[in-house]
Structures are given as structure tokens and as C-alpha cells.
Image 1 (cartoon, helix red, strand yellow):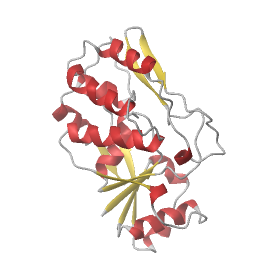
Image 2 (cartoon, rainbow, N blue to C red; image 1 turned 90 degrees about the horizontal axis):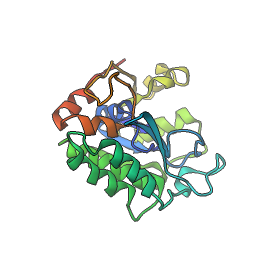
Image 3 (spheres, rainbow, N blue to C red; image 1 turned 45 degrees about the vertical axis):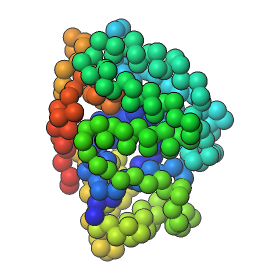
Length: 229
């Protein structure tokens, strides 16, 4: 069983979704510190004037607080309007926009809940079944090192393979996981390109841009463009 773990991000870029796609179980790492000025509550889309950043406020956000203790603001009117104006003429707007609104307007305002809702709905739309759990709802040793926490989470779900983002190469050694019967893999995205509305392709925008411009079958093909090493 392949396991992946990552902090919740708001409609992140396709590389994040490739990590989910590669795993059998995806743990939303919400019992760790909130990252200010990161992608937990913001991302970029393609507007009529080029790249545009959208952000949902997180009241009381602080790097001294856990993600699980924070919520998204209920004021999402501006974000919804920005997305609508940017993609109203996109080929898959009518299918995708209601799904985005469903996540952004979720009654449960916790960061992890809204992100999980979006992930589940997106994979369902793509015809793929994926399993998600929040780490804040699990029992494990939160005082252990980052490496040992991940190993314990793998053991808890009998995962024999842990898939990490490329940035983890400087943090984790394969041997430490191998000794525990776990194969540590790093995911490497291959170049992704698809039809956009602008004259020049802009990579690594929010998954919203992919879904608005690609059919479900095309999006799944893009999700598969990665290597595990």
C-alpha cells in the first residue's frame, strides 16, 4: 500500500494532485504549524490580464498555531467572482465551477475540511476513487521527529511504500525507511502542458486552470505525467 502525506493547500497545482494520484491513501497533514505566506490559503489562476492570485483570509492565522485550529473566512465572494470572470468562457466551466463553489462555500470552515472536500470532488469528477484522512483525527506520537512520525503513520496503515515530494530528498534517507520495511519514493513531475486561453503557456497554476481547460480524460493523462524514484 502506498501512502502520501502533505499539508492541505487550497486548489493547489497539478503536482500536488499527482502526489494524491500516485498514492492509495492520502493523509492531510493538518496537525502541524500553519505556514504564513504559503499556499495553504492562496493560489494563482489565469485571468484576462495574465496571472492572478486568489486568497481566502484565515482569521487569526499564525505560524504558532496548528492548521487544524484555524478556519477559512466565510467571505469568499471576491474569490468566486474572480474565478468566474476568469473562466466563464472556458470549455469546462459549467462542469467545474459548481464543484469549486461547493468546496469554497462548505459549512465546515476548517482548512482541512474544505481542502479535503475539493480533493474528493475533483477526483470523483475525474472518475477516480481516492481515500483521504486527516492526521489530526489519528492517534500517533506527535512528539516524535518528522521522519519517525511519517514512519509511524506508514506502519499504522500497513503501508510498504511512502511517497514524498521532491523537497524531501534533503530531509529523509531511504535507508531509515528501508530498515522499517518501507520503500521511500520521491515523486518527480514531468513537463505538463495543455491548451490555455493566453498566448503563452503558464505552468504550475492552480488545478482550477487544468480542470477548466481540459476534459476529465485529458486531466487524468496529465496526472500520470510523473516518475517515482
